[in-house]
Image 1 (cartoon, rainbow, N blue to C red):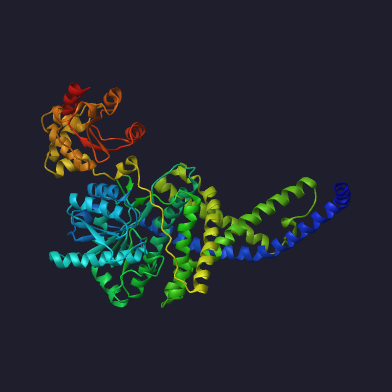
Image 2 (cartoon, rainbow, N blue to C red):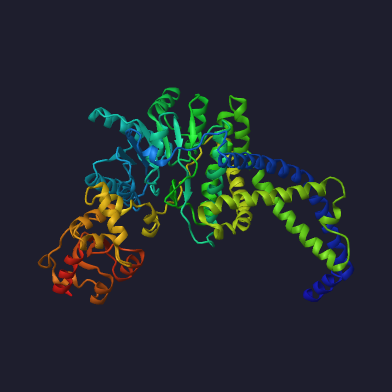
Length: 626
């Protein structure tokens, strides 16, 4: 009875006329609301787009003048000239919290890759993080230039707090050894430091208080939109925006990693702020330091992206690869840079800084405005298409008059196209043009990531202010690169052979010219009698940071040698020789690739550790044990 009555009422309320009327009413409401918002939104987008266009024009103009050798801003010095400068003592600060899984790989790789000689790592950890402490102590026992910097209290605190205690540990080390560090460089646990980066920082430290080396995400597949968005953002910012900022006298914000500070600059920061070199209460202490140094009148520079052997001289790392992790990190950036920076510094003490602070903070409006523009574009396109199909005139397009709004929208479309071309050019230079084709799609995706991050930043900041609570540090997830990602950052084997005195430069050049196709250069050097197998593998051990040595057959128990199937050992040239402490130790004449490592993970749950042996030694082991 009730069901039948309900159906009758529903049928009366949903007659064709009623539905048409309600649909027309709500579409009219939407049209009026969209029509009211659109002019204001269009004006904002025009202002923001002209701002971006100004930076692009300055960069392109300088590029054209540089090609004609009439550049009005100084160009970077050649890397060879930087490498010949007197080497200052560099301290590398690496703050950690529960990073035992990545710190060993980071230190091992970078020590083997960095060409600069005069540096030490000071690695920070907390008393309640025994895993990270154990990893650092293990590194201390292997490398004389690695030092544990233990905070006096439990963690986690902010990154700035950990950096401050690392600084104090460096001072204590100086008192104990009588040595002094001239430059401090900050890095994170997942960073790949370019082999020439310290040469750059050392060279410019003679004239600048802060030097920022570019930071570029490692390449990932095109469909990983979240990480690819970071590739786009950093390519554009570190190719164009920060370079122009430095040229025009704006303060250069630190990127948190790859930042070099002279000792005098850090001491001045400490004097100005109660011995705090890094501000513990600030979520973005790197940005804060760039602004503080400029307010003290100290010089800063951003080193432009320069290619060395086809590889950018930049700090490389993985950024968040999941949507939620990206929103979390960008929330911290927006909160620290835009909201907390506004709260702490207002609009600056100098008129010239207002423009750059505006560019840093315009995302508070610009991010939601971009998302709103996307929605209005989709709504306008859909209603226009439906009206064309029905031969009617309604929707957002019909509500626009023929006055100034339509030309303004056309101008915005033109400026958007120019910006996408500029952004794609920056991305293509670093990651290739095939990757750059995805810039328009990733820009649309980025609008929503940034909008959600902005709303979350407003919420967290307002909540902290109302409850009078400190802002909570939002830690970024860290991923360490695979071996394949590390290869471009290794020192060339030829450079190690000559630099370590194994082979004369002339001999190397002559053997390179006579090397048969398909034969490795070192193998050819051995056959020609210019190099022994032992010297070859000593150099390879230095390059790859993998220990090497001779293993005798009688040292290996039979059951250990059979820990892997014989066909696997023969095909992949890996032979187990010891099992201890949850690790499987493998002898091999080849540097293990990602394919081999993946296979071994499927065959054993033990951690695989490699030792290089010469081909002759491996053949002896295989004949005796396989």
